[in-house]
Amino acid sequence: MESGGSGFFPFGGGDPEELLGALREFAEKQAESVQDAQREQYATLTLNTAVELTAAALSQIQAEGSSDAQALALRDAMRILFPEAVALVSAARQGFMHQ
Image (cartoon, rainbow, N blue to C red; front, side, top):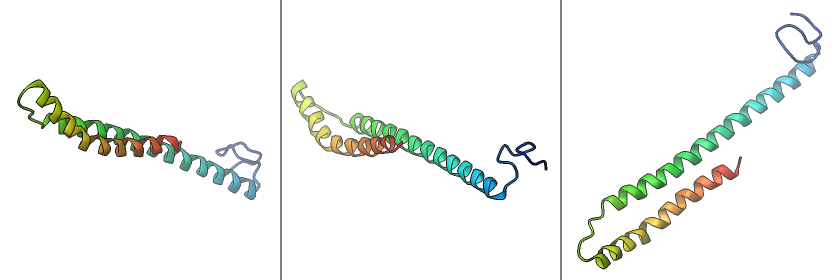
């Protein structure tokens, strides 16, 4: 292995402390990058889950009667579904905000 920063390592000129410091910094940057990617993936999955669960729940409602009765049934369902969807979206937003 050559000294002076050439060879396989683009780090300092052979000083073990500089090499360890550079390796530590590199590892920290890699760990931050992985954490950011994981947070973004979690947030995206959470948002998708909120949308899919809400759509699935609404598709299961069999509203009958007049249009006013059907609208009332859908509003009643949304009173239950909406807080759950908001909780999932809030969790996703927190994941995005940590970036």
